[in-house]
Amino acid sequence: MPQTRHLLDTFTMDIVLAAQTMMFITITGYFQELNYKEQPIRHFNRTFIIVPEGDGYCIRNEQLHINQPTEAQLEQLSQQIRPKTPELLPTAKPIASKLSENVRQQMIVTLSQQTNMKMEWSLKCLQEMQWNYDNALSAFQEFFKRGQIPSEAFT
Image 1 (cartoon, rainbow, N blue to C red):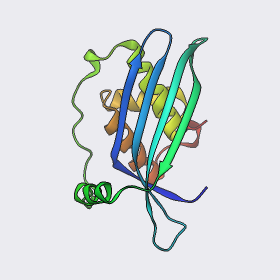
Image 2 (image 1 turned 60 degrees about the horizontal axis):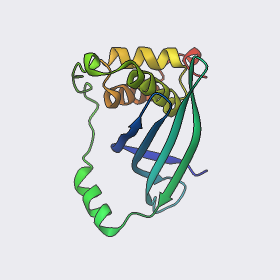
Image 3 (image 1 turned 90 degrees about the vertical axis):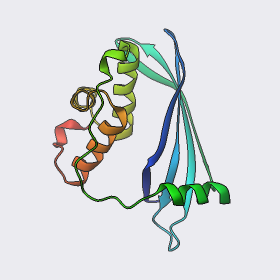
Image 4 (image 1 turned 90 degrees about the horizontal axis):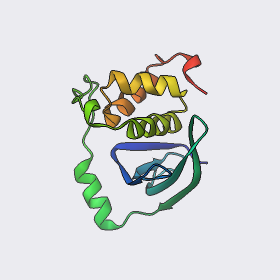
């Protein structure tokens, strides 16, 4: 696998279906391959089918599609990307009261999968970011980059 840098501002997460027996989630976005001189940008679409299993959840099926973005996508991406300065994270909007327990559990599972953090650490991160997934992921990445997440947080 080539080294990559994910362009986190481009990520979208769609919960296509959320039922008692199954969840269907799609995550899309862009990343840059760092092993090549030109560092090409790629588009990805990752789909998960998640089902309840025991006391938690299990990924029953996962598909990853990677493709070369079109010229129109690259143009839109160049307008979307802006230089980041190491500022404070945006203020999280309190949305926790609007989320069902199933949605919260899925957010914990997804954050754990994306970060390799244990479920309890993913829960803590989401709670501290008031259940704003984007802010939780950004906070993780910032603290990870600074080396401020203890090793026991990871699986």
